[in-house]
Picture (tube, one colour):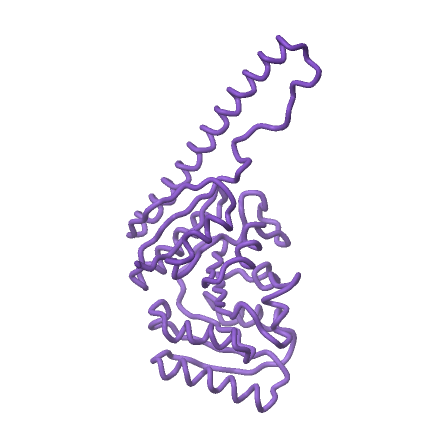
Length: 283
């Protein structure tokens, strides 16, 4: 079964970034791209019963009018969905990558679940159509996908920038080690310098785990540096990204230390909220 990248697109300004990042990943991994746009079950449908206590004859006429309007809305929603897919295909083509497009109606998680078996990675924008660019808001679909998918999830930032280096957040957990292995094994990161960072108390065990992770990347032929720093993970990692001009961050989707707040629970989206570079979450 052919592996592929699945890029989730909507009508937001983040859709272009998703497509540009998908093209970058596709060219480095030689994976095909499938663009997916999902119409919600209520998208294009009308509201509730507006006929009220109208007499029978007038009520029948009104119901017919409302039915026609619902049909028109559904057609418009489908046309808009097809236009979104066509725009996405055009962006990818301009980036030198051909892609298939799929338009689905229903629940987003169910639609993503249907393609999970062949998805090497899922890409989604940091924010959706309803979130705007308020820093404290993220797309509700992003939160659902983060908690619902078992595939690596690439969260695209607002605009694509060429990625020339990578930061790996490492807390010594099994989830963080899976992220390191993914970086070591994926052709996506070949030729890119990697900095692996642990933020914590600097115990001997933590230093040993960090060295093991560094060695794993080094043995895979990756130019890697490692460091252990004190402080709050969110602040320290953000400072490193800004100070060193990091273009992309990779992290595990679960942890057992103070870094756990970055990956699970109500504060799990903090780094994605504040970080201005794309983030890959590896389960």
